[in-house]
Image (cartoon, rainbow over all chains, first blue to last red; front, top):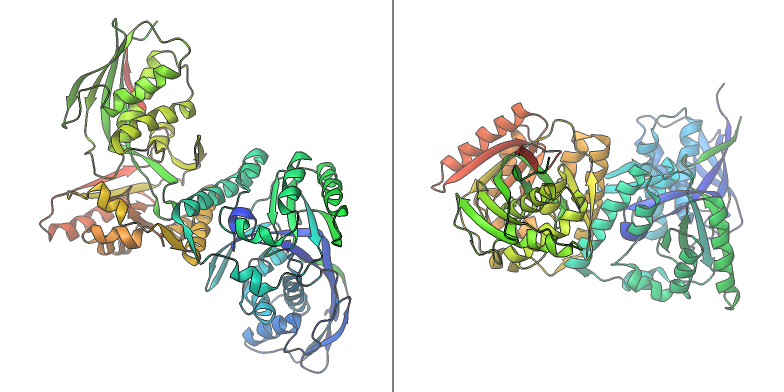
Length: 313
Length: 313
């Protein structure tokens, strides 16, 4: 039976996992958008509806449609039908958990399913990254890769994009706080140093190596001990109220560690099971209750699958 | 039966494996020193004999005895006997394959055996690193760790030293050329940049992550593709005649890749089996034959064991 319509879950993701700035990401499970894609008799891609956020309806400007158009362009023969995209946006843009990546990854995954899977998940990554280009100016893969592949991913190369799928640690949960403050991308970018001390760089790649070894060995203690960032966090954490206190209290409450999700302002922490992740959630809420900053706290297991099909017909 | 004397093989090692500057090393099998340690009725440590190289006979200055003395100091009760060390030195000092590390690692391993193993191999690393302090001014672990533990190792932390044992890729061989030129340590050190571009640093830690993933996955192609160094090699390779040509020709002859061993002048390459490693050896020799630089070429499998016992009584 030929598919006409598909509804999918497009997950939020954590990029820039501590030592793994620009390379290490992971996929979340209970935070994400819902998207419906349906075939249209007219060719091309249109945005049918966006619920939840104000985002461009112009298909040349919307991340989801831009990503699908990049995919269609790569086909030898474009299909004799088009796509209508409906987006139920739950991930706030600018929150630091891959809002645009969810749209791009979800859209290309869904369109690929509707076309009978001409592309593998790995092949979809560069198309979703074209969506990121529309959102932030560069075809970055560190959120779209975990959104599509699930679990933990390493962006080994960027031109062309090459992504490795890493094993996950059993039973891992993330607790994420999104303090609803706006950090301008330009400020978040400009605060980063262009050069780094070689000793800090060595410590950073020692921890990247250790973290990947920990994932393979299912070693919680080593994983915790590798969640360190000597390069980016010292600068960007200044932009996030209560950052140090959140990380410290989370660790006191049993978390393995944490850091800045993407370029912030969200803060992620990892815990070895749901119970701890929920304790961490309470602790973090206590810290933010005493500020006048609105916030959301999420608890999610690591999603080993990536984008999920909810319905199809 | 109480041991009186032990003869061991103290292996050469490769440190600074490409992207893993200061953290990644591995252990060799057919290059190394022989050492004999025997108990003496007098306490303390003395150097009995050194064959093959001119090295300090003063136990306060010799790497092997300095390392053993550091170990004895860490014991709650020092033994009521001493140690005499005999060194048959085959690894040339200053060659870049861990000559001093072999002496330090070999000596503490042997003395530990004679004492009935009060320390684990991991616990011996800091003592052997004290030998490195005597040799080069800093208690670096990146050669002593693979010499003691075997296989591939990652120095995750330096203070205190924490080392991870990584899996090896099946059947891996190294081909190493030691061009017999002297590169002053001060020059080799001063040529390194104190700061590095953040984009290069990101590429470097992406490759460290990929290389460790490749070791776990036994993935030759990814291992080869991760043997890249954007930070150190561009500077230090200028000090090594024919460096680029050696690496290129080795890869053409089937090698997976290579780089500068330690701080040079030795160049290492890895191959997936003995036959290829020997072809690579011929190719490298051809390049150096046309220079007037004396050289040695070695082929060795990766030694998964580290220091080996040859005889004991």
